[in-house]
Image (cartoon, rainbow, N blue to C red; front, side, top):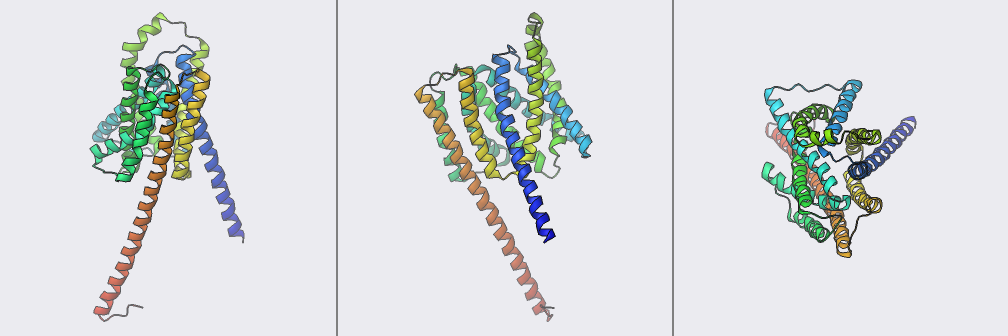
Length: 345
């Protein structure tokens, strides 16, 4: 009876922790997107490269602190490992840079809508890198998302521009590359703890950004050297939010079911778009609005199909393992009988 009560208590604690981390992930995701747009639009800080650099510095220091406080052993890298980490940092850096740059040049609503095609770009990248071919059902589930994105981008949605769309599309492909490579690094043979990976990749990203800041943003900073202290505080706050979002993302993926995360992700997209339209007074036509709706519904449908496929694959794998185990037992019994031994001994 005591053991049953203890198990029920531990289960309730895990459920409470899962709800807490999911709520944090949701709030930080929406909040960071809105805050970054506000930093660019309302606080007159037109420096996406510098903002990305602040994110890396805060996230790297935070991840290193978590490694030390948590007693997590950091993996040792050889020369080949450092080369691989450098290549990953380039992909990681490109994804973050393009994401921040897109928020600066287009509306949050358009940015969130176009980023709904990331599953499609991830499929393409996975096929190119790993040779993985997805089932026709999953491929077809992406089509409504692409159709809705085209409608949402047609016309004037929050200062539509070809430059903005080009940056967004490049960011989607960079995100697909990052998803595939991160999956390999976190779950491969020589996998890294998420905090360890973050602490290793962020210094490399900062080193890559320093020349870009000097070339493209430092001259403007020298001319406009009167950046208000309130703006600096908002930039630093954005860095802390980026770090805590990484932490929340790690624990959410560990404690929350995939279907719950995908549904929360769809709700997050809708929430971000609605809040951004209200706060930043984004102009949206009826056709654009219909496109956003189609994209979000398509994204929800894709998440449902992808979850069903994952569940079916897991069930099939479990059945195959059970079948293999039964076959092995039968072969062992038959072998014992052939040798004249007692199989039931």
